[in-house]
Length: 327
Ligand SMILES: Nc1ncnc2c1ncn2[C@@H]1O[C@H](COP(=O)(O)OP(=O)(O)OP(=O)(O)O)[C@@H](O)[C@H]1O
Ligand SMILES: C[C@@](O)(CCO)CC(=O)[O-]
Ligand SMILES: [Mg+2]
Image (tube, rainbow, N blue to C red):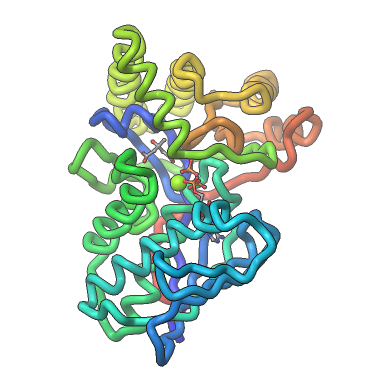
């Protein structure tokens, strides 16, 4: 039995635009997904995912062809929910040259699902590490990141960047532009996260931005403008200029909003943070619902979020320098 964990992340800048080759800067945070893999004698896959929003369930099946989940929800919903775990196990089988390997998989996660904190990437990264180690193979961090990217790419129907999976695999703050992924220096950042209790569908939201880009040249320009903003943000990050970082985060939120990926509750939380004196605030991740991230060294934003209609939880998050690890 092997357990591995990997962190979630927030985007300082650049989500969505990163899918089209613009740079982005995500940062790992100290909330983790833990995946335990135990080799089975047969080639079946049994997944126990307590925190999955389908109310905690166990699925047992042998593969895509004859999946018969023993749960009281529609098979379509279960397949959609289990796609990332399936893809992680496929990558682990391929990496270890063990196409028939079966596992009992248990997932425990502190990262809300579909909320912009990279739960899918953390589950995939930790899943690949746990399953490959269980088979006695030690992959390097770069390979885990690459295979996790391929898994997300497959589940999100070809619409994924390397940002979430690279960040979750390596930890810390990173910069991703197309294939180019690297760690970057970051000062201590006073992240405050607001969570509306909801979720967005990453695949659908990315597809929505793609349509806008194809339909309107100014939407394509908006995506490029986000790239310009990220380059400016990198300079502010290197200088540790929190005020400038905040201003750029506010701007980034406006551009994401114009691309249709914000929501009423995300906007409310962003405004609550700004009114409370945060340096800046924006939605993080795919959007549609879920989380915002603000920069605020004071208690202002956290307490304001406590009184914001539509906000379920406000909490502080530390940058996590540690990526995937065996527990
Ligand atoms: N604890 C978990 N157990 C099982 N599967 C999980 C768990 N957490 C996440 N997943 C998988 O990840 C999916 C959510 O991924 P999605 O990309 O939509 O959101 P996210 O990664 O949380 O947010 P974002 O990509 O915007 O940062 C879930 O539907 C499920 O398939
Ligand atoms: C929306 C997106 O940019 C980030 C989701 O966390 C999608 C991706 O990069 O794969
Ligand atoms: Mg995701």
